[in-house]
Length: 284
Image (cartoon, rainbow, N blue to C red):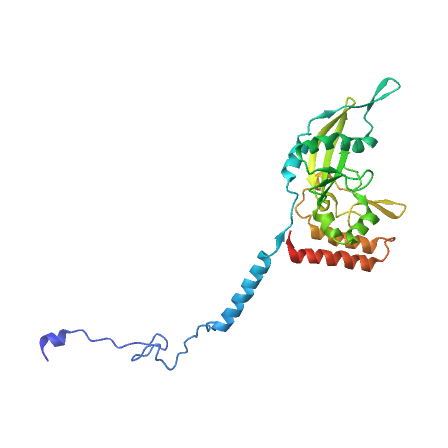
């Protein structure tokens, strides 16, 4: 053996990182168990999961959006232009001019005041039947509008409770009352015998009512009779938790609790069926 060969470093033997012995590595070790990675999903499983995800996506994407009144921007713009305006109502009787500022008649009179101005800006806008619902129509009666006014705090009637339930039970009644009917609400004050418009609100019925009172929906009760559906305070009208579903759920609670509603189960089934059908067709 040469001098050079004796000075060469000796080759290290392989040492197993699993058992610590020399001569082999962990891959060939018989004493160490190598953890097995989770098996990859087979193509068929992946295909099923993919199809399920896609079907859910397309099912959701196929839902239609509830059609809103197409001229709502113009309507709200006109109504908001009334804010800050003052109205002087007078009648002439026996040669005398008499100022009218009685809050009991303001609501009906303001319909006559506002309608011609709105009509000037919206050709499709029509008056509704006198002393009946709705106050106005839009787009060949496809949309309905109810005008409400109040001073200081809202105490107007949204509708007679029994009549409203009956309207919901009509064919297409849930769709009509929840999505095709808007409320034009004006707050006013009487100052120096003039009516001053303070604020305008453009709302759905489910925004107006309250859900945390003695009854599931804010209600006027007379002699144990559930009489009129009423709004709650203005500051709660824009609460994000108010939804069509919440309204329907609370309406059904009202039907169950109300002592004088007849044929309860049939009414509940009719309203629920309509609402579930809408959920399958529309996103809202």
